[in-house]
Length: 196
Image 1 (spheres, helix red, strand yellow):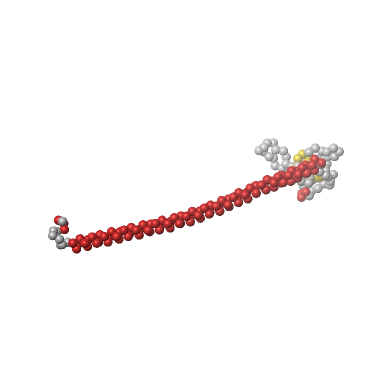
Image 2 (cartoon, one colour):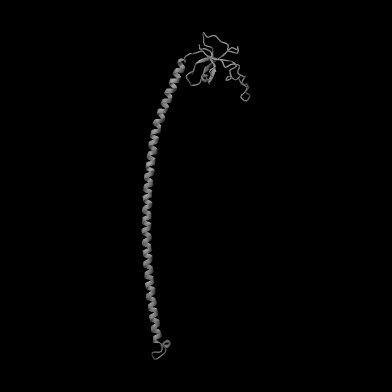
C-alpha cells in the first residue's frame, strides 16, 4: 500500500465502487471517516487498480434519489486517497493488450479498406477526365462542322442572290428593250399599234 496522497495531477478520473481486498484493513482519512474503496475504470495506467478515497471526496457525490433530482455534492473536507494496489491486475494488463491489439487491427483494416477506395476514386477521376477530354473534342468537332456548314450556306445564299440579281437585271434589260422598241414603233405602220 502507498502513502496518502493529495496530488491532484495523478488522481483517477473514472472509478466505481469496489470491495475491500482480503488481508487489507479499512483506513480512516484525514477527516476521520472510514474511507471508501474504489476501482479505476478509466483506460489508463491505473486500470483495475483499487484505492482508498475519502467518503467526503469532492468527486464522489451522494446517490441521487431519482433521475431528475440530484442532491448537491458535500463540500470536500479532505482530498485524501491512498492506493491499495501497486500494480495493475492481470486482467487489466490483458485488457489493455487486447484493446491495443484491436486498435491496431482496426487501423490496419481501415488502411486496407481505404487503399481500394483511394484506387477506385483515382480510377473514377481518370475516367471522368478522359470523358471530359472526349466531350471537349466532340464539342470542338461540332463547332468546326457548324462553322463549315455556316460558311457553305452563306456561299450558297450569296450565289443564289447573285443569280437572282442577274436574272432581275436580265429581265430589267429585256423590259427596257421592249419598252424602247414599243416607243420607237409608235406612229409607224398603216394602222395604229393598238388596232393591229
